[in-house]
Length: 125
Image (cartoon, rainbow, N blue to C red; front, side):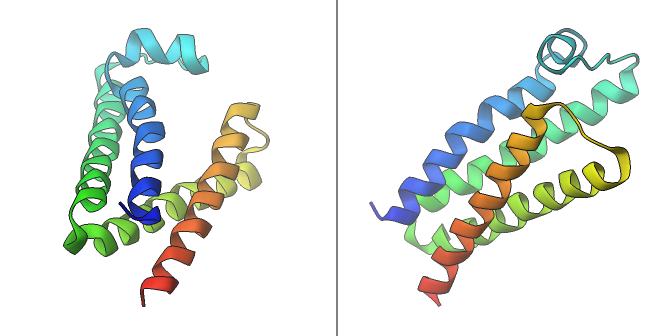
C-alpha cells in the first residue's frame, strides 16, 4: 500500500464515526455530543443526509485506498470535502463568532488534511 492509501484509510477512520454521530439518532446523540437540540424531523433529515454524504465520501476513499485506478479521484474527493468543510467552518467563525473548541479543532484538522491531500495530488500529477 502507498502512503496515499494509508492516508485515505486514516482519514476514513476519523470521518466515519463523525458521520454516525450526526445521523444515527440525531435527537438523542447530538444533544449529548454537541449540545444541539434536534427539535423536529426536518432537522433530523438534514443531519441524516449529512451522514449519508460523509459515508458516501468515506466509501470512495476506502475504494481509492485499495484500487489504484480510484486513488486520484478519491484524493480529489477528500481534498474538496476537507477544504469545503474547513472553509464553511471558517466562514461561520467570522460571521457567527467563536464556536465550541471542538469545532475549531475540526476546522484545523480539515485544513491540515486538505493540505496533505493537495500535496499528494501534486506528487501524482
